Length: 339
Image (cartoon, rainbow, N blue to C red):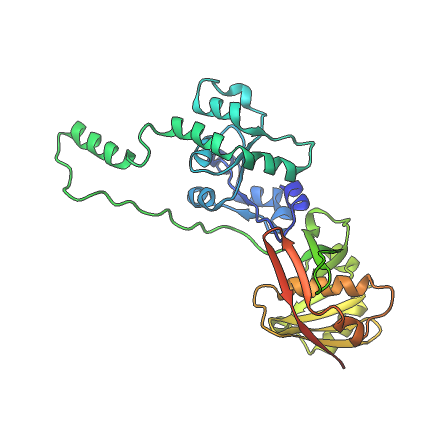
C-alpha cells in the first residue's frame, strides 16, 4: 500500500483497499489499522469487511488483485485487472481464475507501476470476455433463472412480478486526506500564447518522508518530524485558530524549516514569508475543490524562486495553467496585492 501511495500521483489516483474477510477475522480491526497507519494517513480508503467491495469494484478504474475471486468479478464487469502471481500455483489452470491468469497482465513488484497499469488497460477487453465466460453462462438473466429454479425446487409458484434488482449500497470506508504532501511543479512548453503549462506531482509524505519536492504540511499534521521539516505550512481560513499574523508567527517560531505560511479559502489565499512579507491572492472565481492544490503550486513556485517574491513577480504567474492529469487542466487567473 505504501508503495502505491508513494508512486502514484495523489491528484490522479485514489487507492481503496479491500481485504479478504479472513484477514479481518484473523486479526482485530485495531491491528489492521495499526499496520496501515501510514497508508491511512496518506489517503488510503479502507473498505469495511461486511459491505463495500461490490461498490468499490463498480467505481474502480482498475483493480490490482491476487488469486481471489474478486479478480474474476472485476474483470467480468469490465475493469482492467493487474494480477499478483504469488499464490497462482494454488489455482486450477482450468478454472475461471486460471484462465484469467492466462490473459491478464501480471504484477511485477520490482518494476514501475504506471506502465503496468497501462498494460492492464490494454488487455481490458480480453480479460473481460474471459471472465464473463466463467462467471455466468447467461449474463443479465441470472436473477430470473435462479428465482425460477428456487421456486421449482420448493414446488411453489413464483410471484407474478419481476424480482427487484437493487443497486449495491454505498460503502462507509475509513479514509482521511493527507496532511503533508510533497509538491513538484514543472513548466511544460505547449506553444500557447498564454505561456507554459505547469505539471504538478503531489505524493503523501507519510509514506515517502524524503521527497522529492517542496514539503507542504497542514496545520493539522500530527507527525512532528514532517511538521518540523515542512517548507510550507497551510491552514484553511475556516479552521484558523487565531488571526493570520499570530498563527503565522507561532508557526514560524515552532517550525524551523518553514519558509512560507498560507491561509487559504475557495476565494483566495494569504501568503506570508518568514521575513514578514505578505501577499493576498484573490482568484477570479471560487475554487471550492482545488484551492489547496492551487496554493500548493504557488507555494512551490515561491519557495523555489531565486529571488524573494514580490507582488509583481507573483502576479506574473497569472493565469496559472496547471496540468493535473492527462485529462484535466486548471486555468486559474488571479490578482495579487501586497500588504
